[in-house]
Image 1 (cartoon, rainbow, N blue to C red):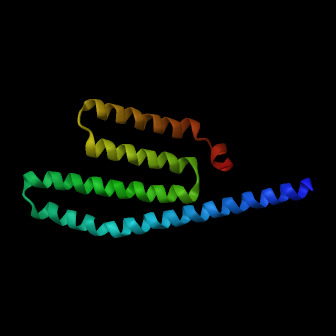
Image 2: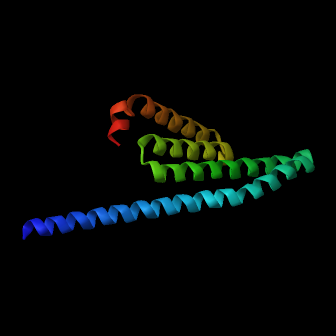
Image 3: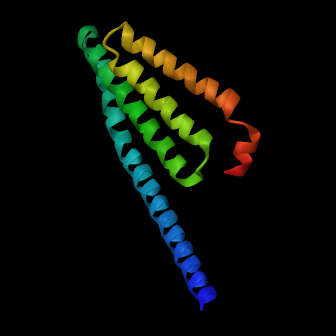
Length: 137
């Protein structure tokens, strides 16, 4: 009786795990589809940089970079949802911090905190993200 209950519980856990993976893949596909649709906006922003005067093109270029880096973060997030590795999580965090630093750093304190955060990510990747961890996950 107990074995049948444990077996049913194990089957339910496997079913939930498979269902969760399917949802993650669907979300990753949705993110990728949305990024593909957003490429049109990048093309428009790129054209606007060339046809606008120098003073106003700075803001448009900043918007272009912001949008591009946001799409990169989205793609990395989609890869992370599918692959489930610590390295992918670090890459998503790395791109998100780089985007924040490049787009909306208002003062030197923001930039300094961003540099420290990037250094911590690289240190984590170099010393704590070992081959055994890669193999385990």
